[in-house]
Image (cartoon, rainbow over all chains, first blue to last red; front, side):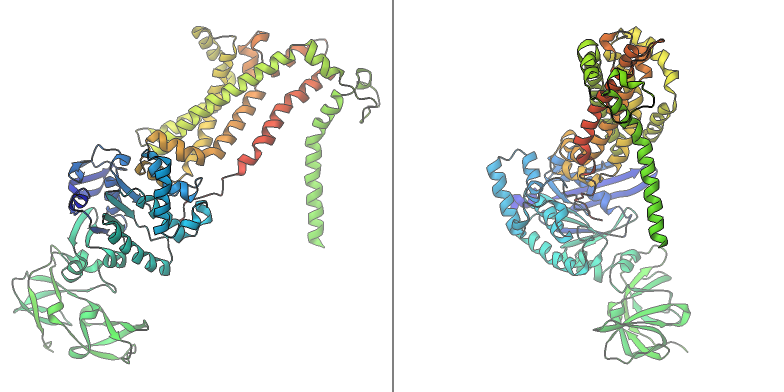
Length: 364
Length: 276
């Protein structure tokens, strides 16, 4: 099992990718452990798909090295890297049946016919595709096509699975179902999964670790909990979490973070210009030192999301229990869970190590 | 009421066009089976009083018609194979690979198509003489390729652009070589395009007249177009019945090919393994 893990280790070292004058990936250093489920998460155009395609061998890095299982693969053809890829469009071969699609990578590797059929059968069984084997891709639903694409990857038992937004063409219900199937599949095969997505929910629910990218730069790598609870900078703070984190710009004044609407005590070293990050779930509703007018309320069934107009012209998003009687136009008292707030340096955007102590009453 | 009138008018219009287009063809067939004495009768008969195949027999056994037919078949098939092979590979390259001047190259190809063939005939003839293939079927294959290839390249380029990149990428990751991916995945997808391009090229070569007239001057290499003209039309006389029989037989290969390939033309168009 350890050898199996070692051969699935992926390493990006100082990888850059330039298209014309466009810098798509800048100095990517990333170690993906063997057997790990790692998500590359970021908005479109952040370089995550390009990074994945470089790993697959479909793009060449402009500089830097990529290695799989300790071997540098920069010059290795895609087919010789022992990786399998699931495309966003599924990319099933339209003129082949499901069985032929799944058998194709085996055929190209010279696996004898009898073994091929056996392995296709097994892969199809594990993905509940057996009845669909004689069909053509166009006769399948989106979810079925998706499973065929997975089957085509699975049948080879590759060192690394590369998945490029594989769920984005499915409807919401099927997506939730496939997320569970993917987690299960990853546990069963024990191979490295590199999963590209712009959907933080997919990244949070499935990954062992998440690598957040933005504008070609790796922002943070960590477990879902690390990325959520200790975002490394303002981009990660704003990108992870739904509804998004409230970011309030203020100043350090007499050992406290000062904003026209919020005042929180600080301990530790801070810079003069600060950004305070408050997740909607870390705002206490109905009690506390602050008071603001409710701008609008969105009921979500199990909870309600409201926006408050706070002093200083900012808007604050809060989450509240569905039972609470909130109405637009009314004023609401609120406070914060100080220990769970985040502090960033406004100039560099980086997370500060300082902690918040307690909310302080505003000097009216 | 208005809708019915509109429909009737539309149908009348359509059928008029069909009749106008089809009449010369029908007349051609009818004339080819009329005996010689009935041809110039005034008033003309529409349905022949007597049906004869003597013109066909004469054409086949007493003239070099079959030789021309063989030349035309060889010529058109060879041109089609050459053009489609080169154009398929070329179009794939223009669509898939990134290299300097790729777009410019594609435009340049179209530009060559803008030149009237009359301008190119003499230089082409001189070049044929230089390389020593003048007055042969090969010279015509080369000449036809010069005008069929650019168009075929453009036709196929647009077909290839419709094939998603990911299909080829998937094949590459699955272990295929570039050529393997091309044969396994691209070619089957491009097949309708390849077939219509072949058809187009074949018809173009089959009907070509000008190059054949200028570049070839021997019965051994003459295709049907110039051969039939040369044989049946002289300054003093036009052999109408033979000409009509020849025209009918010249049309037959095209009709056969069309009938055979038509179903391939539409097949595969709507098929897609890709969603999105």
